[in-house]
Image 1 (cartoon, rainbow, N blue to C red):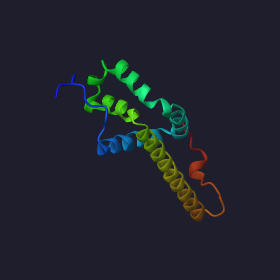
Image 2: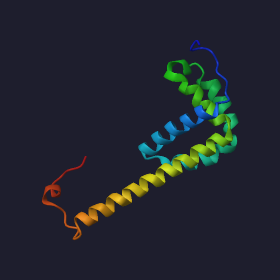
Image 3: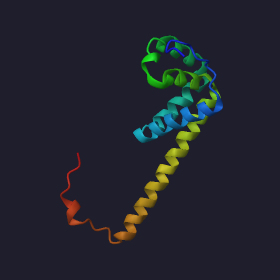
Image 4: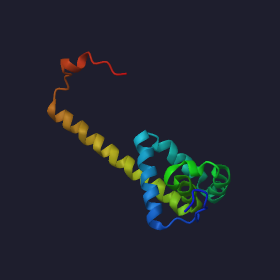
Length: 127
């Protein structure tokens, strides 16, 4: 397949799940989960139109992105159910991250019940 061949805009379910997982993880890891969820909820009804315009405007650049990721992202927004799956996956990853953070906080409280800071961290400068 040539880089200039146009793939089908309908993603197979397994490919859509793979793209959703990678996109959701990158969004949550960047810390932009809440604004992305709000934005996706607003543009979800316009998904097919945005997909078509993204395909037209981004087509010259898609061959430069390795692994057909440009076509995959545009195809993801072509189906409204995929956008809903992406929103739900971002929410579940954010919930998992919050639970892990709470467990870590409880673990630190058990290790240091008085809440005293160690002298070692007293003069630590965070940039």
